[in-house]
Image (cartoon, rainbow, N blue to C red; front, side, top):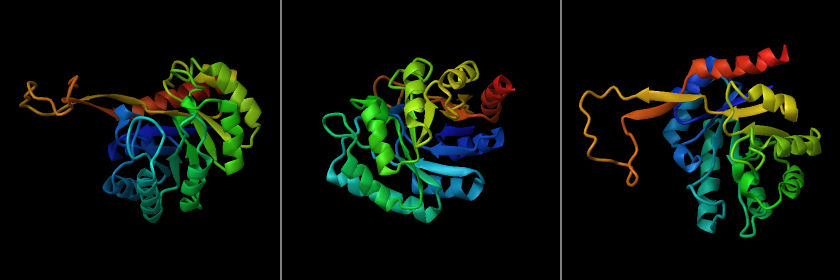
Length: 248
């Protein structure tokens, strides 16, 4: 079993480690599906973590069709991440036709040489997941993060099972999206998957005494800027325990 926590801050990384996670995927821009974290965030996380640190390399939200300029940005982010000492990067590029952009993924992997490579949930919006599976195996990716092309991993159990079977140990299939203490055992049992990705985040109320709720920094529609979402050790432990109990 491998447990990866999707973290949105250094604090969340530390909570993931204290809760028993094997590695973290550090992201910024969680509401956009995850974007590349800052240099300072990666450095601080690396200094404080003893577990594996992967970072997402994604310059923006939206689709996964990247321009040459965006490719330059991603390659430079990978170079910096390598210098900092991360263990892996999380990438994903598609063509206009919804297929894996083999040339772009290969280019990013060449820069990341020596790091573990995860192909992220761009996989879940590609045209044919089973063709993409074989392409990513041929490219030499280490794992695929996927919900089985469904809204959640629980809803995608049938496809996840088929992907796990077809992968046959040639690449790791990591189930992610909506995994919690109530469904991890079912997903594991019905798919045979042994790697899981979840956030284990909870609402943390702001400690501000003065609050001006008439002004929003997040545009329209406004969000509650006096609540943030962070991974908690207790939540991580609860999900891991649910999995382990089911395997006992």
